[in-house]
Amino acid sequence: MLDSSLVETLSRFQPAELDRFRKFVQSPFFHEGSYVRDTTELWEYLRPFAPAFAPPGPTVEEAYAFIYPDKKFVKGKVEVLMSKLHQLAKQYAAHTSGASFSVPEPLRLAQFFLDRDLPNRAEALLEKLRSEQAAQQVHDVGHWVERFLTEWQTHRLDTLRQNNHAHESLNQTIHALHHGYLALALDLLNNLFFSRRKLNVEDSFAELVADGIPAAIAITDLESEPVLRLLSKGFEFVRTPEKHDRASIEQVLDDLQRNSDRIPRDVARTLFTYLRNHCTWRYNHGETAYAPLLMTLFKSGLESGLLFDDGQHIHASTLLNLVQTGLVSREFEWVKTALEHCRNRVTGVPNPDEFFQYNLANYHYHTGDHDKALSLLNGSSDNLFSGLMARKLELKIYYETDSPLLDSKIDSFKLFIFRQGKKNLAPNVFQMNNTFIDILRRMISTSMAGNAERIEKLRKQLNDTALVAERAWLLEQLERM
Image (cartoon, rainbow, N blue to C red):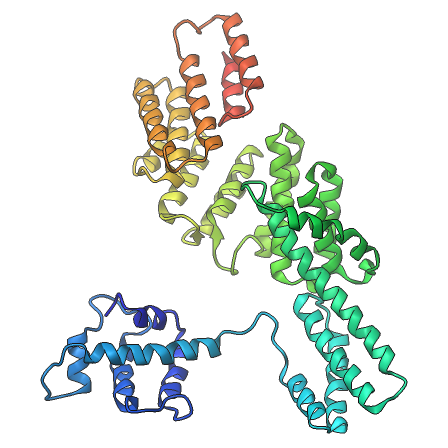
């Protein structure tokens, strides 16, 4: 039963939801027909196993014995009940899932009264809703949708009464519609344009929509709407990153911090991601002056909790960039504290513990404890997500310590990337790592030692090569040579 769709669905319910599901199963409003008693009994059997359903878990045979005591087992009968119960579970799940744009109950009631020709009853409800909405500080997409629907019903009320306010309420309706559209369009466009930095995205239609955004922004009072103002700033960053410098980033960061109580957490997290990636993009293009600003962003994000997806877990790529930035900035104690704070909270990789070990090894490498770093890397597997980073770190340590194992480790890494490159590595990632190996192999050749002309030639080649991993480290080693 553990591999059934029924168990898969039930395992996603929270404990409180499971308690309510019991009432749902027993309710004649939702559960009727000839199978009511048997499916109810099946749920009573399964309930103690939920939501963990730990192995060995429930079995069809035991379920049958529970539902039909003292009766001979009939093959297929429990499976029919499982299907019936799963239909109920899916129906219940649909009730527990909130819509992206929910309509408040008072607004639905006001619409009912308007539909049934009771405008006086609707008026008080709409006035209260408008008053509450005017007092709300956070004006996100959900706020504008609710406000649009409220103003729309208010316009219906004014039209039914044939009063002079009908055009005024219609104007407010259009105003809320515009703001809601702009907030949602900016959010979606920003996500799309941000994604195309790493992926080939078909965005020709989105570009046409984006061309109209500046005009929509121009008729909006951005000074009084921080969410729209910051989303529009994010739009500029992801669409034309080359036009924005450190001052632009600092202005947006200051705006975010000053309006933290008026910005939804998901919007703030997204904008922080844009700013961090913009700094990283600049840094990777040789503008090392962006490192301190990137460090400031990571410190602020860690302190505010905006680095964590759900307030609890941090994505592996975010942790990796955090550690790399802290180490480059030589903020070793802060990195150590941050790693401890993020322990057992990593998501986004198949083996979070292994990934965390790599980052801890990288910390020890930068603090000069090579033995400790190697001991943490010894357990690394051929997993693609951490294998590339761990193996490169090993090569750097073996090179810096003049280890006799360096040659064999280079060969092993070369084989690893060629095996992965056939189906798992993006072409640019494959090229970056392959170039790193080739340059490192030339650095350790006997013909390179003490030959200033060859060293300078290799350094020039490295600077002229667009795709190479560990560029800064390779340049540092060539400088020492």
